[in-house]
Length: 562
Ligand code: GLY
Image (cartoon, rainbow, N blue to C red; front, side):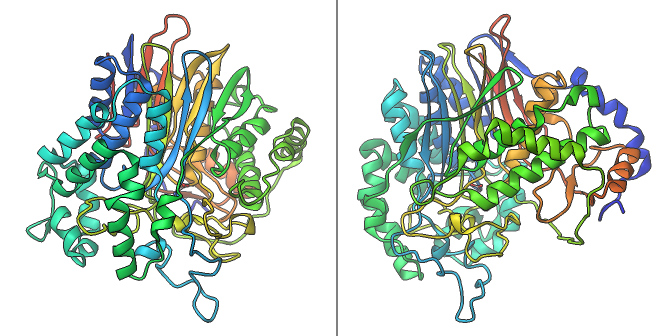
């Protein structure tokens, strides 16, 4: 059976044309610096900083704050994330600014008296909010590795909030979708509804409250957010609306530096994030398995290469969901998971697999790309990959008083009950159970790939668990199939996470015959609307040219260089 939405055979005949995407989809090139994000205005803010002499870290902080204004669904100061940094002097680091569970959080806080998860409680309202990390993370990055002042890098964001920006088609779609939720809160409606109606594409959206908040942060730094008026507003609002956030949650929150999670794939060094994100580990496990297959000889999107990649995804997600959690609270068996011997034995198991016994699970997956990623390289040789998030669109859909920014719903990323699937259909283990001060397991996968000690690729994506597979496929498209970075980003994707036992494919991913061949091998295949948004930069090792690729799926984004 070919899934819920069948691909018309006529469209499938056009597949060979798509295979030549490498010739058609061209990246943006520049000799010095490159900024790629989902929102052109934010990319512009980054390039402005680079042109003014700032480095990639300065630009990353500027883009982070700018996206908090011009990408309200997902860019944020009320959420958290990860930043991977490769410095021109050869040092690598990760800034972990993942949110933390409030100190009053308890393992069963989302269960009713019958032990059932209270519907919506993990995704809406103050109980869903984890202590935000973005402001601390951006501050840490700027202080340690930036060259400009906070005021300089925050200026573009403040001007965009104060003077307004033109609402994009993407914004308008999500403003419309959430209008009834905004309407229930006067302070949210005052910002995100225009005389009670959703803003339309091209409307000017001015965010005075947010401008004021950003000015306070520019003036007083993270202190204002965690120990000053902003923390007080959030805690007071939380108290009024059934939340459990305290001033102590904010005053004790700290972003931290971690060593990147690294692995090697076909001579390339992959740098990504360790737990509390699962992204780097799971990506490395999948790559470690696939290293034992000759994907290029098997052919792009052949049934055999698809089976091998799907099975690598299966093992990667199974281990992710079984073993990983915040390393401050649980031991993550990374060495065992990623050992060479284990990768080889998992690859052998895949080679021995002929037919899969599919389970009959059909789930209607509603895509929720949320999150946002941006990639930056500068002329000095620094590179930065940032993925940060509110989790769902507009997070918990609450704004504290007149702070002007949405708070995250990151508590949904925890295992709120054994066996319970979260909004991304992830069924996770007790390693990711809620504990006070613990960080929920993430799938964010900002990545920097090195070749012979030099930056080759910078990339990442939104999309929950689909982040990992979108990044995986983009890497394979470049390294195994020789695509240019734009073609690699734009190529149709597939995703498999074991539960549900369904291989999701984007339209035009597979020929009719390949779909049939995979079904014969036991896979359930369903076609879904396109997902994720990979934002990437590739540096040509021959001449140092920077090639930027904004995902075709996100036409409001831009790769901008100089
Ligand atoms: N909030 C989605 C993730 O971190 O994976």
